[in-house]
Length: 276
Image (tube, rainbow, N blue to C red; front, side, top):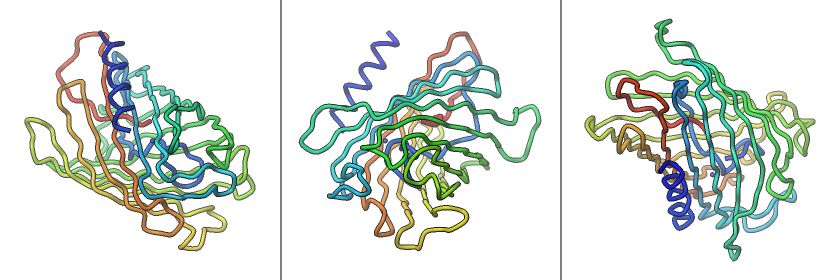
Protein backbone atom coordinates (compact mmCIF):
# COMPACT_ATOMS: atom_id res chain seq x y z
CA UNK A 1 0.00 0.00 0.00
CA UNK A 2 2.82 2.41 0.84
CA UNK A 3 4.51 1.73 -2.51
CA UNK A 4 1.23 2.39 -4.27
CA UNK A 5 0.80 5.69 -2.45
CA UNK A 6 4.31 6.87 -3.32
CA UNK A 7 3.88 5.81 -6.95
CA UNK A 8 0.53 7.59 -7.10
CA UNK A 9 2.14 10.80 -5.84
CA UNK A 10 4.77 10.58 -8.57
CA UNK A 11 2.20 10.09 -11.33
CA UNK A 12 0.11 12.97 -10.02
CA UNK A 13 3.06 15.32 -9.85
CA UNK A 14 4.23 14.43 -13.34
CA UNK A 15 0.87 15.57 -14.55
CA UNK A 16 1.04 18.75 -12.47
CA UNK A 17 4.32 19.51 -13.70
CA UNK A 18 12.35 21.54 -7.23
CA UNK A 19 16.36 23.14 -5.29
CA UNK A 20 19.91 21.85 -5.86
CA UNK A 21 22.40 24.08 -4.16
CA UNK A 22 24.19 24.96 -7.38
CA UNK A 23 24.56 28.67 -7.04
CA UNK A 24 23.02 30.71 -4.30
CA UNK A 25 19.38 30.13 -5.23
CA UNK A 26 18.11 27.44 -7.56
CA UNK A 27 14.98 25.50 -8.34
CA UNK A 28 15.04 21.90 -7.11
CA UNK A 29 14.24 21.95 -3.40
CA UNK A 30 12.57 25.24 -2.56
CA UNK A 31 11.91 24.87 1.14
CA UNK A 32 12.61 26.58 4.44
CA UNK A 33 13.50 23.86 6.94
CA UNK A 34 11.86 23.39 10.31
CA UNK A 35 14.00 22.37 13.28
CA UNK A 36 12.05 19.21 14.12
CA UNK A 37 13.46 15.92 12.84
CA UNK A 38 11.71 12.73 11.77
CA UNK A 39 11.20 10.36 14.74
CA UNK A 40 13.24 7.17 14.87
CA UNK A 41 10.07 5.10 14.28
CA UNK A 42 9.19 6.92 11.03
CA UNK A 43 10.26 7.39 7.41
CA UNK A 44 9.26 10.52 5.49
CA UNK A 45 8.66 10.34 1.72
CA UNK A 46 8.50 13.67 -0.13
CA UNK A 47 8.13 14.74 -3.71
CA UNK A 48 9.24 18.30 -4.57
CA UNK A 49 7.90 19.61 -7.87
CA UNK A 50 8.79 23.04 -9.26
CA UNK A 51 8.07 24.68 -12.60
CA UNK A 52 9.83 27.86 -13.75
CA UNK A 53 7.22 29.84 -15.66
CA UNK A 54 9.39 32.94 -16.14
CA UNK A 55 13.14 32.33 -16.31
CA UNK A 56 16.25 32.39 -18.50
CA UNK A 57 15.72 31.55 -22.16
CA UNK A 58 19.43 31.07 -22.92
CA UNK A 59 22.21 28.99 -21.41
CA UNK A 60 24.06 30.81 -18.61
CA UNK A 61 27.62 29.63 -17.84
CA UNK A 62 26.87 26.37 -19.62
CA UNK A 63 23.70 25.60 -17.63
CA UNK A 64 20.50 24.73 -19.53
CA UNK A 65 17.81 27.47 -19.73
CA UNK A 66 15.40 27.64 -16.79
CA UNK A 67 12.39 28.93 -18.76
CA UNK A 68 9.62 26.27 -18.63
CA UNK A 69 11.99 23.82 -16.92
CA UNK A 70 10.34 21.50 -14.43
CA UNK A 71 12.12 19.73 -11.62
CA UNK A 72 11.22 16.66 -9.59
CA UNK A 73 13.06 15.72 -6.44
CA UNK A 74 12.39 12.54 -4.48
CA UNK A 75 13.45 12.82 -0.85
CA UNK A 76 13.42 9.98 1.68
CA UNK A 77 14.28 10.78 5.29
CA UNK A 78 14.75 8.16 7.99
CA UNK A 79 14.73 8.98 11.69
CA UNK A 80 17.66 7.34 13.46
CA UNK A 81 17.16 8.68 17.01
CA UNK A 82 14.69 11.23 18.46
CA UNK A 83 17.22 13.95 17.57
CA UNK A 84 19.05 12.59 14.49
CA UNK A 85 17.91 11.79 10.93
CA UNK A 86 19.44 11.02 7.54
CA UNK A 87 17.88 12.07 4.24
CA UNK A 88 18.65 11.17 0.64
CA UNK A 89 17.73 12.99 -2.58
CA UNK A 90 17.19 12.00 -6.19
CA UNK A 91 17.12 15.07 -8.51
CA UNK A 92 15.47 14.98 -11.95
CA UNK A 93 14.69 17.62 -14.56
CA UNK A 94 12.81 18.13 -17.81
CA UNK A 95 12.71 21.03 -20.26
CA UNK A 96 10.29 22.54 -22.73
CA UNK A 97 9.65 20.15 -25.60
CA UNK A 98 11.21 17.27 -23.64
CA UNK A 99 8.62 15.18 -21.85
CA UNK A 100 11.17 12.87 -20.24
CA UNK A 101 12.74 13.36 -16.86
CA UNK A 102 16.54 13.24 -16.83
CA UNK A 103 18.70 12.30 -13.87
CA UNK A 104 20.52 15.35 -12.50
CA UNK A 105 22.20 14.23 -9.28
CA UNK A 106 22.03 12.75 -5.79
CA UNK A 107 22.63 14.20 -2.33
CA UNK A 108 22.78 12.88 1.23
CA UNK A 109 21.80 14.96 4.27
CA UNK A 110 22.39 14.07 7.95
CA UNK A 111 20.72 16.38 10.47
CA UNK A 112 20.77 16.75 14.26
CA UNK A 113 18.67 18.91 16.57
CA UNK A 114 18.45 20.07 20.15
CA UNK A 115 16.22 17.52 21.95
CA UNK A 116 12.83 18.71 23.17
CA UNK A 117 13.62 17.64 26.74
CA UNK A 118 16.22 20.41 26.94
CA UNK A 119 13.31 22.89 26.75
CA UNK A 120 15.16 25.56 24.78
CA UNK A 121 13.13 28.74 24.01
CA UNK A 122 13.63 28.17 20.26
CA UNK A 123 13.96 25.14 18.02
CA UNK A 124 17.52 24.56 16.79
CA UNK A 125 18.96 22.00 14.40
CA UNK A 126 21.86 21.67 11.96
CA UNK A 127 21.66 20.10 8.51
CA UNK A 128 24.68 19.17 6.38
CA UNK A 129 24.10 18.22 2.74
CA UNK A 130 26.67 17.01 0.23
CA UNK A 131 26.32 15.59 -3.27
CA UNK A 132 26.91 15.55 -6.99
CA UNK A 133 24.99 17.02 -9.94
CA UNK A 134 25.64 17.09 -13.68
CA UNK A 135 27.52 20.13 -15.04
CA UNK A 136 24.81 20.70 -17.64
CA UNK A 137 22.34 21.53 -14.88
CA UNK A 138 24.59 23.27 -12.39
CA UNK A 139 27.73 25.41 -12.39
CA UNK A 140 29.21 23.23 -9.64
CA UNK A 141 29.35 19.43 -9.79
CA UNK A 142 30.19 18.70 -6.13
CA UNK A 143 28.66 20.93 -3.46
CA UNK A 144 28.37 21.20 0.30
CA UNK A 145 25.58 22.94 2.21
CA UNK A 146 25.64 23.75 5.94
CA UNK A 147 22.23 24.86 7.15
CA UNK A 148 21.57 26.01 10.73
CA UNK A 149 17.82 26.08 11.45
CA UNK A 150 16.29 28.36 14.08
CA UNK A 151 12.52 28.44 14.51
CA UNK A 152 9.80 29.40 16.97
CA UNK A 153 6.08 28.77 17.26
CA UNK A 154 3.98 31.12 19.37
CA UNK A 155 0.26 30.40 19.50
CA UNK A 156 -0.81 30.48 15.84
CA UNK A 157 2.34 32.18 14.54
CA UNK A 158 5.43 30.43 13.23
CA UNK A 159 8.81 31.76 12.03
CA UNK A 160 11.91 29.94 10.78
CA UNK A 161 15.32 31.31 9.78
CA UNK A 162 17.88 29.27 7.80
CA UNK A 163 21.24 31.12 7.45
CA UNK A 164 22.58 28.73 4.81
CA UNK A 165 26.28 28.48 3.90
CA UNK A 166 27.05 26.95 0.47
CA UNK A 167 30.44 25.76 -0.72
CA UNK A 168 31.51 24.54 -4.16
CA UNK A 169 33.79 21.54 -3.70
CA UNK A 170 34.31 21.27 -7.45
CA UNK A 171 33.07 23.64 -10.12
CA UNK A 172 32.89 27.19 -11.38
CA UNK A 173 32.40 28.79 -7.95
CA UNK A 174 35.06 26.82 -6.07
CA UNK A 175 37.54 29.71 -5.85
CA UNK A 176 34.86 32.09 -4.55
CA UNK A 177 34.78 30.27 -1.23
CA UNK A 178 31.76 29.91 1.08
CA UNK A 179 28.59 31.71 -0.01
CA UNK A 180 25.61 33.00 1.97
CA UNK A 181 22.06 31.95 1.04
CA UNK A 182 19.56 32.96 3.75
CA UNK A 183 15.98 31.68 3.84
CA UNK A 184 13.04 32.80 5.99
CA UNK A 185 9.50 31.59 6.54
CA UNK A 186 6.64 33.23 8.45
CA UNK A 187 3.14 31.75 8.69
CA UNK A 188 -0.13 31.91 10.59
CA UNK A 189 -2.34 28.93 11.39
CA UNK A 190 -5.95 29.96 10.92
CA UNK A 191 -7.75 26.59 10.78
CA UNK A 192 -6.64 24.43 13.68
CA UNK A 193 -8.80 21.42 12.90
CA UNK A 194 -7.51 20.96 9.35
CA UNK A 195 -4.07 22.46 10.06
CA UNK A 196 -4.08 25.12 7.32
CA UNK A 197 -1.36 27.78 7.44
CA UNK A 198 -0.89 30.87 5.26
CA UNK A 199 2.41 32.69 5.05
CA UNK A 200 5.35 33.68 2.91
CA UNK A 201 8.82 32.35 2.19
CA UNK A 202 11.98 34.22 1.21
CA UNK A 203 15.11 32.81 -0.44
CA UNK A 204 18.29 34.78 -1.04
CA UNK A 205 21.68 34.36 -2.66
CA UNK A 206 24.08 37.09 -1.53
CA UNK A 207 27.25 35.63 -3.00
CA UNK A 208 30.61 34.87 -1.38
CA UNK A 209 31.30 36.07 2.15
CA UNK A 210 34.63 37.57 1.10
CA UNK A 211 33.11 39.40 -1.88
CA UNK A 212 29.29 39.64 -2.07
CA UNK A 213 27.74 39.99 -5.51
CA UNK A 214 26.47 43.39 -6.68
CA UNK A 215 22.75 43.71 -5.97
CA UNK A 216 21.59 43.09 -9.58
CA UNK A 217 23.59 39.83 -9.59
CA UNK A 218 22.25 38.64 -6.25
CA UNK A 219 19.26 36.31 -6.14
CA UNK A 220 16.19 37.21 -4.08
CA UNK A 221 12.83 35.45 -4.21
CA UNK A 222 9.71 35.90 -2.11
CA UNK A 223 6.21 34.56 -2.39
CA UNK A 224 3.02 33.35 -0.67
CA UNK A 225 2.71 29.76 0.53
CA UNK A 226 -0.03 27.52 1.89
CA UNK A 227 0.67 24.54 4.18
CA UNK A 228 -2.04 21.91 4.59
CA UNK A 229 -1.87 18.88 6.88
CA UNK A 230 -4.75 16.86 5.44
CA UNK A 231 -4.16 13.99 7.90
CA UNK A 232 -1.60 12.98 10.52
CA UNK A 233 0.55 11.45 7.74
CA UNK A 234 -0.16 13.54 4.59
CA UNK A 235 1.14 17.09 4.11
CA UNK A 236 1.10 19.64 1.29
CA UNK A 237 3.06 22.85 0.67
CA UNK A 238 2.08 25.07 -2.28
CA UNK A 239 3.64 28.39 -3.26
CA UNK A 240 4.58 30.85 -5.98
CA UNK A 241 7.97 32.57 -5.85
CA UNK A 242 8.55 36.02 -7.38
CA UNK A 243 12.07 37.04 -8.44
CA UNK A 244 13.15 40.50 -7.27
CA UNK A 245 16.45 40.99 -9.15
CA UNK A 246 17.57 40.57 -12.80
CA UNK A 247 19.61 37.48 -11.84
CA UNK A 248 16.59 35.70 -10.32
CA UNK A 249 13.97 33.66 -12.16
CA UNK A 250 10.85 35.82 -12.17
CA UNK A 251 8.26 33.15 -11.43
CA UNK A 252 8.35 29.63 -9.99
CA UNK A 253 5.43 27.42 -8.98
CA UNK A 254 6.31 24.93 -6.25
CA UNK A 255 4.49 21.99 -4.72
CA UNK A 256 5.63 19.55 -2.02
CA UNK A 257 3.75 16.38 -1.14
CA UNK A 258 4.80 14.51 1.98
CA UNK A 259 3.78 11.09 3.27
CA UNK A 260 5.04 9.71 6.59
CA UNK A 261 5.22 5.98 7.28
CA UNK A 262 5.29 4.98 10.93
CA UNK A 263 6.77 1.66 12.00
CA UNK A 264 5.34 1.52 15.51
CA UNK A 265 2.52 3.05 17.50
CA UNK A 266 3.10 6.51 18.85
CA UNK A 267 1.07 9.48 20.15
CA UNK A 268 -1.05 11.17 17.51
CA UNK A 269 0.94 14.11 16.22
CA UNK A 270 1.23 15.93 12.91
CA UNK A 271 4.81 16.07 11.69
CA UNK A 272 6.05 19.08 9.71
CA UNK A 273 7.55 18.60 6.26
CA UNK A 274 11.23 17.83 6.47
CA UNK A 275 13.78 19.17 4.00
CA UNK A 276 14.51 17.94 0.65
